[in-house]
Image (cartoon, rainbow, N blue to C red; front, side):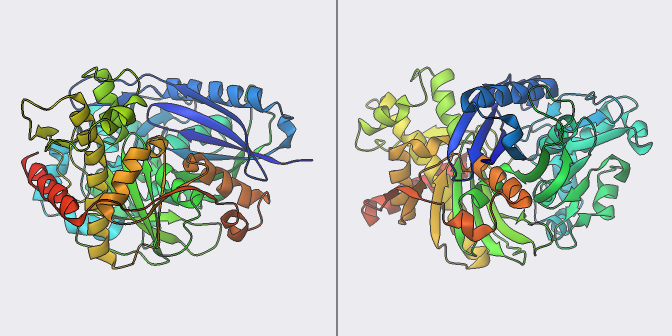
Length: 493
């Protein structure tokens, strides 16, 4: 009987479920969006129940499209919006508050006070991260400090903290398991990535009781099985987990040091495989765990995050009403030869790596009377690509590992003009695979490796196929001018 893997890609604006067969054919797919909540300026929350409902609806939709025997599902893999954090009751599964989303900036003052107190270097050496509201630890601290009685209940073991992967495993398994994987743990500010354990000193710094934390597992093993799920039989192994960007790196078959991928979604995320030792640099990019397969050695990566990428296009659509659909930006931007000197720094949620400026705000400069909507559209695509150039340069300074391949994925990677601009501004070939939903693909691979659907990484590597290659076409002088204008604008953001 044919074997299938069900992959859950739980993202910032919706949940996608894909059902994949052994030959890497997508036989069923469904996406379900859910509401974003903005209770105060700079605050972003999700209703955990809405996340769960979007997951169950997406599972149902994918199964309906696939028309397969559910007994043929060999495993379930999960990938998730990583730093988004929530706490729930162990007994009931009921969340004590909305999930605080990775984009949320409410803990900026706390992070600033921790930096002022001299904790930055110690945190970086232990976690590979910087003290920024982006990560989970300060979000958990905020919940414990601002919800009545929660801290005491956490110390008594009544509550469970998790990123969204933990919550989904808990729900899928009928409460059997409270676990996470090493890639998600490495994004919490609480996990020592060299020792690969929760760090008591960091827990003390953020006043987080160890009783609250999930058990940390590898990215590819059987954690639990389904129980009590509508539409799915009991007993399906839940066998693969990785944070969305690590899952995309794996789904792109970036298995060798120097292999790189950039995912263009709500934000843009560049990861470079650095091998079996963490590389700690000084340029503002992060050191993170990429994956660990069962008992094999851990693979590390350097990562740079641009908080706003596709979200900038959404802002043009929803905020400025320049386009009706996100897909229209390519034709609009391509209708002019350049941006007429306009620079858009899309710091709509602060600046991530390598700048790490939570107080930065978006800026549009270079406006003249002759500028029109097309110039702004092109400047938006250039701004997305230029953020990635900053990250690439910072990584090269830190680890000096030549980037062997630059593979791209995510929804915005379908934009040919954006990919050409990325190649032009990097002065490097950019390769887009046949399947650009590599985040879900990576989760499927991890689960399938744990359950024998695929025998090893070489079998996965053999399935990777390029769809299009973009080669640099921009003149060096034009590239230099764009980079200089960008640097000036970033300094003003």
